[in-house]
Length: 215
Length: 215
Image (cartoon, rainbow over the protein chains, first blue to last red):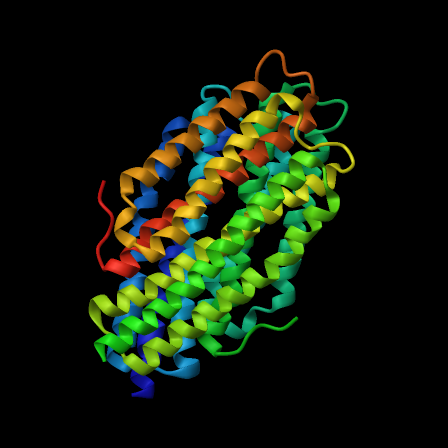
C-alpha cells in the first residue's frame, strides 16, 4: 500500500512537472514576443494556456483519486493536499505569462518595452526562467534544491524590480506615463511569477520528502 | 454519516465566513487608511493579516480532518477540496488589502491618491466591499447568489479600472509618473481582490450546493 501510494504521488508529481515545463516555456515565449514585438508569438502563448488549465484540472482529479483509493491520513494526506497548492501556483504562473503576452499585443506594432528597460526585463525573465527550471529539476532529485537557493533567486528578482522602478521613476525617463505604467505592471508580472515559482519549489520539496525546506 | 459530513462541511464553511469577514474589514480599513493618509491604520491592516493566515491554516486542518474521518469520495470529496480553493482565494484577498495599506504607508504623510482619483478609488473599494459581503451572505443562504450577480459586480469593477486608467493616462494628468504608477497598481489590487472574491463566491455555492453557478 505504501509503495502504491508513493507511486501514485510520483504520477501526480509528473503532472506537476508537465505543468511547470509548460509555464516555463510560456514565460520564455512571452518575453521573446514582448521584446521582439511579435504579435503572433504573443497570441500563441495565450492560446497555449488552455493546456496548463487542463493539466491543473488533471492534478485535482488525480489527487481526488489518490485520496479516495489510498485513504491517506495525517502527514500523507497533507502531502497529497500540497500537490493542489503547487498546481495552483503553477497555474497562476501560466496566467502571468499570458499577462506579459497581452502587454506585447496591446502595444503592437510598437515595442512595449523601451530600449532603456530591455536589459532589466531580459534579466527578470532569466531569473524567472531559472526558478521555473528548478521546479522541474527538483522533482527528479528533491534534495538538490535548498531553501537558500530559492531565496537567493527571489532576492535577485526583487533587486531587478527595484532597478526597473529606479529607471522608470528617474528624472531622465522620456517615455511618459503610459510606458511607465506598462513597465511597472510588467515588472510586477515577473516578480509575481517568481514568487509563485519559489512557493511551489518549497511545496514540491515538501510533497516529495515530507519535510519542509530549511535555509 | 451523511448528516455528520454535512455538519462538518458547515463548520468548514463557518471558518470561511470568518476569513471573508476579516478580509472585508481589511480592505475597508486599508481604503480608509489610503484615502485618509493614516499610517497607523494602514499598519493595523498589515498586522491583522496574520489572523487571516491563521484561519487559512485552520481550514486546511479541518479539511484534512473531514477527509480522514468521513472518507468522502467522488462529489463529496470534490466538495471538501473546493474549500481549499476558496480559502486560498480569500487569503489572497487579505494580501491585496495589505498591498493597498503598504501603498498608503509608502507615500505617508502625502496622500497616495490624488484628488482626481479619490472618487474612482472609493467606488472600486465599494464594489470590492459589495462582492466580499456576498461571500459571507451566501454561506447563510447559498441560493440567493446568482452567477449573473457576481458577473455584474465584476464588470462594474473592470469599468472602474478602465476609468482610473483613462484619468491617469489622460493628457491632463498633472502628477507625474510615480503617482500614475501607484494609481495603476492600486487599481490592479482592487481588481484582483474582486476577482478572487468572485471566484470564491462561485466556489462557495459549489461547496454548499454541490452544483456550479449558472448565469
